Length: 435
Image (tube, rainbow, N blue to C red; front, side, top):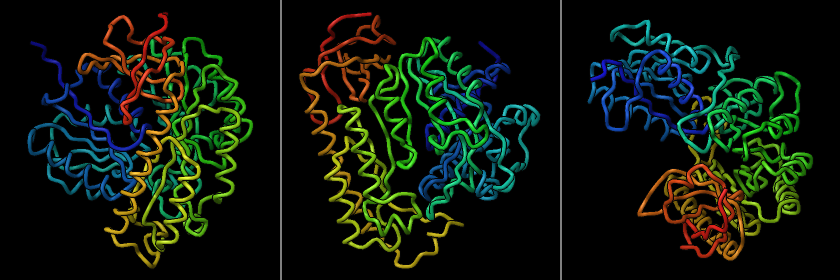
């Protein structure tokens, strides 16, 4: 039996956290640790936290307490945005050994190795203005897809958002470094890269290099067949970016664009950098260039001061836009943000009802988008998951499809005909030819 120590990981929140956890895991593995499988006990646990909502904070605390309760002798290190913003909340949990803010995320393996044994919690954080390090990261472990961190931090300071306090100002690595990272990902055999960041389209604050030049450089990396931009602010989705991605064979027909509200009054209170007319213009520009595009949109409901009329404006606006998917969040007051002190708080049951209404709208729009794909042809990157005799993959425009499991198809891209939809989450695909 192996005597190697085991390390377990819990990742909460965004794709950026996922890429960072994967990079931290590689450091532990290089140091001789074995990554614990789900359900296995470990000698060390690393929790990469999120703090975008109160629920995310609570979930992190619950996970940490469960780890300590079930494995009291393990070393427990907590990092991420909650650890940065509220380190004492986590340090106060009996059994936590290290609380490490975002500036020191790259030192976790070193600090855990130096501990040797459990002790009273040690906190390593800094003020928001000192968050200047860039922890380079990309994910491994998925045979088909990698999340590549291209940007960190945010300069926007929307009234509801605590992320600039947790992540600091917008910053990035040079394009040449990121192209080299993409080449390393290609060398591992992964064929798709998802570009991740806090405000991905704001790339270039550190180096002065425009986002479009990053896209051009990545498009030239051999071995990567697909790119997706995880999320991009509407004011940064320029005609140049749209035209480039539409012409590229590697950048896929898929955009995720936050709107947060369909009410101009609420957008102003949120301190967003656009209004609904400008947002609609960006959506129309994307659809002119990429008619079959999958559009996902983020929305917050129950923001302080949001009236029934404001919500009705949001609902009608989104219904007219008809995206393929809505990601709906009830507003969560975050400490130290302006909106936390705004008057006219929306009662939670009202916010939950509004979220449910938009959730139902999302289901209807998603079903309609899938139904439009029936009978069309597409190219699918097949994944390794096997369920009920089927394997799954995604088209370029992010339609999830299935076909009878065939191990030889894993991590290949094949042309298919989309034959039927269950109306919910997946479409049946008939393979037309193989690589």
